[in-house]
Length: 168
Image 1 (cartoon, helix red, strand yellow):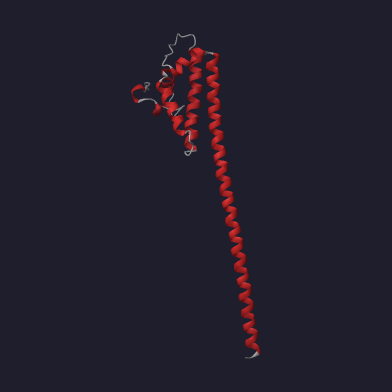
Image 2: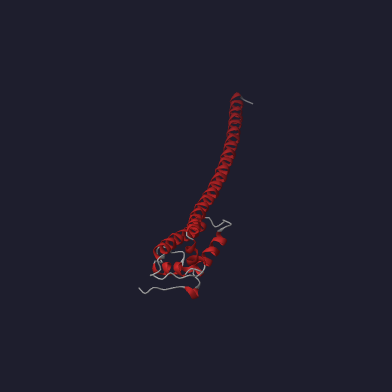
């Protein structure tokens, strides 16, 4: 075998060794990148769960505030949970309407929050709470009928036989 052939074979062998080394190094780097991507994905999922829990807690905190207000003014509860109407000449009417607007805000935000995280275990109970409360509150139904765009997720939760339609 000639010297030139040996040099050529040696060159091919060195090229194969270097190429193999590069391929193994690339495979190792790719594996590390995949592991980093998986870790990042887990962090994102965890962040989404924490955000969903935080948003749900914010909604429930606001609802607790309304309930604390009802503890301070027990007469308010009947307008939202016991089917009591609120005639305009009722001395509590301005307070009842304002609390109704706050409660509708909270209910609508809860629906939006649960839609953003459908895996939430409290989505079903929240919808049930809204439906039950709307069924038992003529005040809320009147507010929603008067301003359906303010709380776009609530009109469809009112029982069909109790939905109120305001003339345009």
